[in-house]
Image 1 (spheres, rainbow, N blue to C red):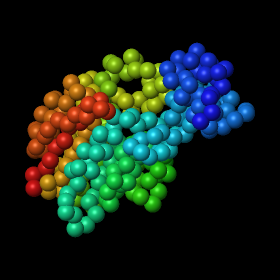
Image 2 (cartoon, rainbow, N blue to C red; image 1 turned 45 degrees about the vertical axis):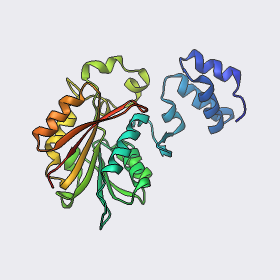
Image 3 (tube, rainbow, N blue to C red; image 1 turned 30 degrees about the vertical axis):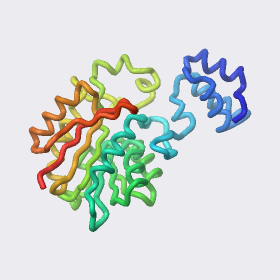
Image 4 (tube, helix red, strand yellow; image 1 turned 90 degrees about the vertical axis):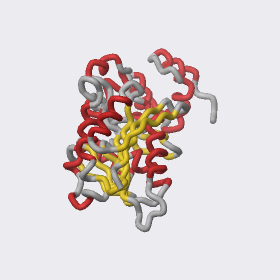
Length: 259
């Protein structure tokens, strides 16, 4: 890749972009002339690079992500691998996987790339589900609505793996997040309530009637929150354990329903 324009690198660095050279190269590869200038101005104004480029690299995939939609983080790749490991084997039929709070659909898409599954994804935000529908076209079915209310009733009691990247930032910590996230991603995709676990509690409370016998629920969370969430899982009849991925700095809670 050609060395990026030093003036472009300087503009990005002055705007606070830590990886200014890498970003300059990506922007220059995406457009040139007046179109490049539009992209640069958006980035300098603080818009996330992924929104500016219209894509994010996730688990070896290039995933479309549009302005106003949560940008999946690398740590969530760990949730994908945990979900694939939890799929029933051997499976007579394609396992049923639900990606709840799906955002752009990256987690479900990555699971479907690694295993043949019957995929459903859902989110309350119609902007997110419109983006997810593009990413999952021909791969899975996308629904819009509040958590389980979005899902078709015929999925009840049949879900083999339910993966949920619920919002888990405590409300009081939103203001200290980087401006890229705080100002450009929907608060509903970030704010987890007083201790960050309100949406996760709702998912854990409702999962039992949707999981198949022996089915698995996986929710990403913070390291300090994990023991609390594991206890919540246990309170709803799930056998829970906490998973960690040090390379990705990821933590999740996995709960298995009774066989």
